[in-house]
Length: 184
Image (cartoon, rainbow, N blue to C red; front, side, top):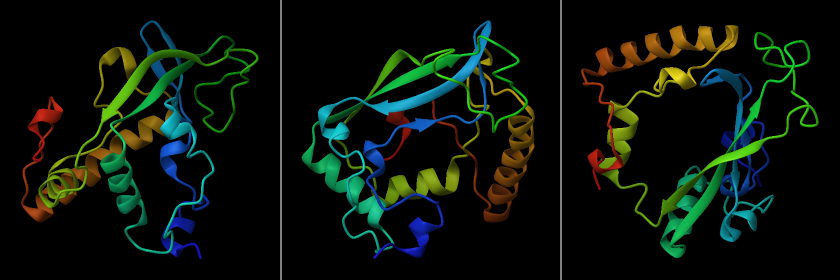
């Protein structure tokens, strides 16, 4: 049975480590702009594509699955791909719900992302990430800033939400520069 928690995300109870993720809105790509995708490429991730998530009805199903995976596997590898805008009429920046045709501009691999085996959910790390960090698409180089009206709206909403949460909880907001700054 699928939990109402996972149903709320509109995604079947499959293992998210094996899925490909796409940005809905455009980002700058230096002097260009495009959309990005993150796709699993290591065999241990590819084999998880559309695989049932064990114990999907449990509240911590995702945490438990990710922890199990990284206790068993030495690494996981994804490709970061970009789809550049080649036609403003067919690939509008201000209309985030318009899907850009991959025949017009196919995704191109530009980087690999490798995650080594690690303890991903220690209590100290959970508190640090959940309570001290802020997630915002503008935490990027100027050459990779978000574009379009949806992203401009998100800029304000993310900033206000983070400020409210950190002030309310009396916690300092920390933006680490390296994974080494996170607690074990």
